[in-house]
Length: 170
Image (cartoon, rainbow, N blue to C red; front, top):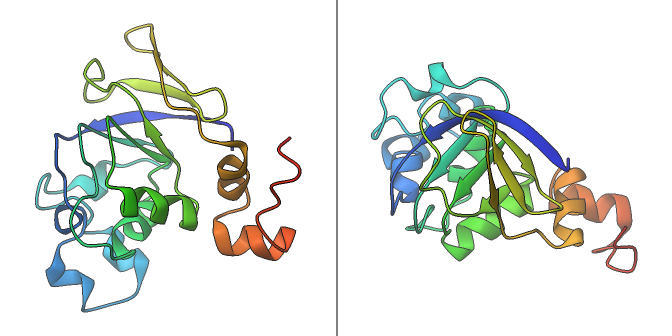
């Protein structure tokens, strides 16, 4: 789970959870595969059809602001997005992503363009824009968060380790 590769799908600042998955869908179904079909559609109609497994949502400041409902990161994950990369995140959204096993990366996204191919190293905190041949420093995730992501989220991590497993940072 340390290294990820995919294409960038770029959005702006202050993308709230209602833009990620509209409220008109959130309360009609708990089927994440159905919700995934509507991810980001208010900002980018047809977005779901453009995603390939492992692609990235790239955004500016304050991604995931708004409500704290877990449907937003769950729907992103169900759509096949490999990680969300943004300049900053709403804290509850950020933690919900880690809890469900969806990687989040904080870095300067101003030089990432739509369709750029990216390589992400979660442990080292590096994003390499292959298209532009440019490396970007990112906030490295603590080892325990990388382990949680690698285990598939917090519930699976607790099942596997019987707790946070902080003693073994390896």
